[in-house]
Amino acid sequence: MAHFFLDATLTPELCPPGATVRIGGSEAKHAVTVSRIRPGEELFLGNGAGLMLHGVVVDASPTELSLQVTTSTVTPAPLPRIVLVQALAKGDRDEMAVQAATELGVDGVIPWTAARSISRWEGAKIAKGRERWASIVREASKQSIRPWLPTVADLVSTKQLAKLAGSTRMLLLEPSATRRLTEFESDAVWPGTAPGESVDTELDIVLVVGPEGGIAPSELEALETAGAQRVKLGDTVLRTSTAGPSALAILNAKLGRW
Image 1 (tube, rainbow, N blue to C red):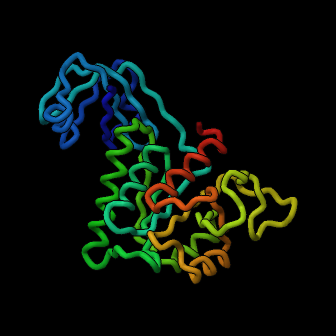
Image 2 (tube, one colour; image 1 turned 180 degrees about the horizontal axis):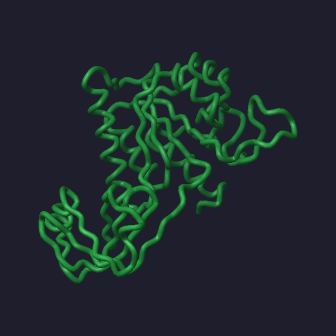
Image 3 (tube, helix red, strand yellow; image 1 turned 180 degrees about the vertical axis):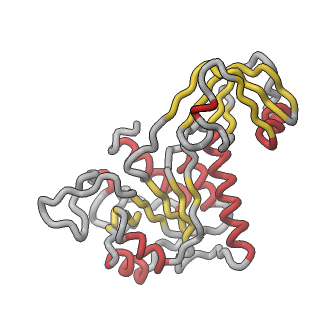
């Protein structure tokens, strides 16, 4: 199995083929003590911003890993971006959604305190919760060898989410919707767009997933008023941990990512 490690300080200019790249800190320690990387093995390095290096390990110690670069590529950021707004959920269901969505290619994650969220981030838990999600995103990105590391935004309220709806294409995953996500087209007419007017295909597509009890009626009204649209995945009701990743898989196919 290929190994992949991240170092945000790497740049394309400093990593041409033939160059020797060195990383230290926790990534080097993990590579040597956990993954047991040894000289002569091949692996990938990236910076989480599109750069992907492949090379051969020339030196490996718990404090520093050296790689001789064989290939260096830069992958452009995907457009449109797909962002998952995941409501806080009890247990680890929200974390399961974040992990799976990252593996499936989501470009950003936003934690949301929904009206029906049983789990709450308050006080010191706000920063701790975001750090936890960022760690999950990082590890899932490494596991799936992704050139781009998804962003993890600050916790938002429904009011803040409604403001976001005005500048994105926001889709509310809601079982009561009449329109299916499989009917979605990237150039579809959205609220505020006149008939025949083209839609900016670079606008973020935002998938909103509610908690265990679903999105509350008052939240649906507020978000739809702000410009969001309801869509459903099918005739069954999915858990909060599976709805987002399922929707993401559909959009990957629709947008030609897969």
